[in-house]
Image 1 (cartoon, rainbow, N blue to C red):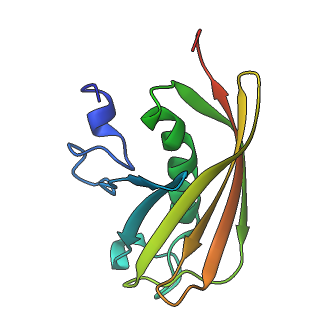
Image 2 (image 1 turned 90 degrees about the vertical axis):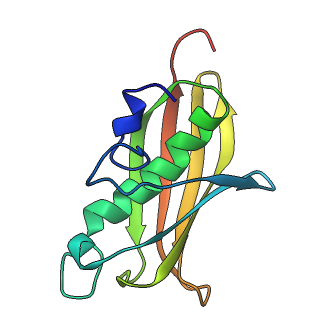
Image 3 (image 1 turned 45 degrees about the horizontal axis):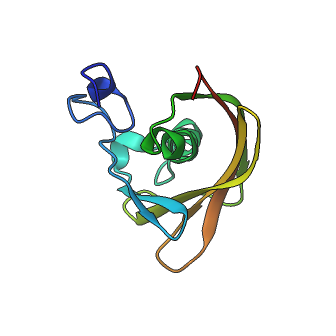
Length: 131
């Protein structure tokens, strides 16, 4: 990771207000965990929808980055299935659903500890350069 990526809002270790996400891969699924605090809420006790979208976007686009590809999100769709509570450990997972040339389609979800899915995402991510 270069110095500029160290400041990424979602995963940058140097960003003092960032989410500081760390990632792992298991069986072709990219994963991270996050527990939202009161500073991440929109309505009282409920995580802000923009940050939910950020988590979904990050897990999908960063999965390609982890494979040494430079990629940017071209399209992002988010489906909010139910409110995502703060102060609960969330599991965010993302996976590749198809590839066409330099365009990769991915899907993602946010899951509560009891298995309830609170949000789902789909993205089309463009691979940049000659990769």
